Image (tube, rainbow, N blue to C red; front, top):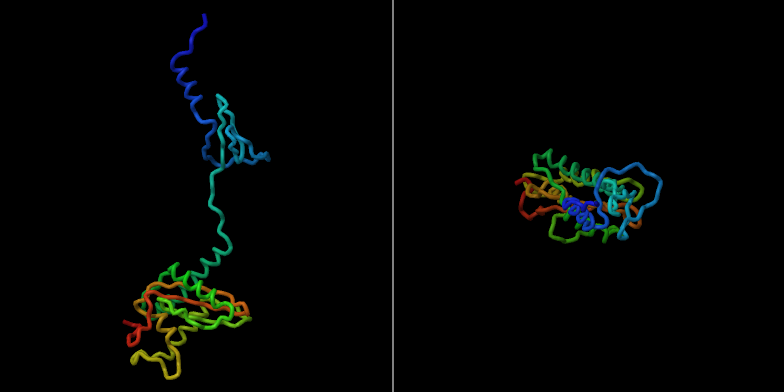
Amino acid sequence: MEQSPSPSRLSFLLLLLLLPLSFAVEVPSPPSSGKGNAPVNGGRVCENFTVPIVGGISLCITPKSRPPPPTLSSYFERRSVREFLLAHNRVRGALREKPLQWDRNLARFARRWANQRRRNCDMVHSMGPYGENLFWGGAGADWTAVQAVEEWAKEAEDYDRDSNECAPGKMCGHFTQLVWNETDKVGCALVNCIKGGVIITCNYDPPGNYVGESPFQ
């Protein structure tokens, strides 16, 4: 006489029938078999292969996801940030001023303005809410963040700390903003001009160069 399936076995079979037609788990990527993608019940597609299981259910095995490699542009962006920060903080450190931190909002502001100036690269300030230094380098040279900051720092020769004034007929505002004591954030951009050369803009927050105030407070 044929025996009926036990209750526990019936429960197991019902559980299999109620399961979804397919499911996915994440495991390390298997060696490539050279085969194309294999479809799974329900119209899904496995990226590598499927393994049949009891009851017509398929196990879709997918490779463990990995972050995409850094792009060339992101590499140069990170290098540019380091160059701008090191150049600024080298000058500030020599005068015992606190180091600046990079600020993405300031960098975006600087790039937007630099992009607007790239047609003729006129040295025109944005008149925005931040402190701002501009640098223009002519065509035929590979201008860098370090060169721009060094040019601004040279204005220290024309700044008199005792009187808090520039030498007659000279500029020193780029230097005073560069070392302004209350400034703690910077963001910069370097953009190639359409007619050659580059324009470099740096923005600072809080801004400096308040009339009658010393940068070394």
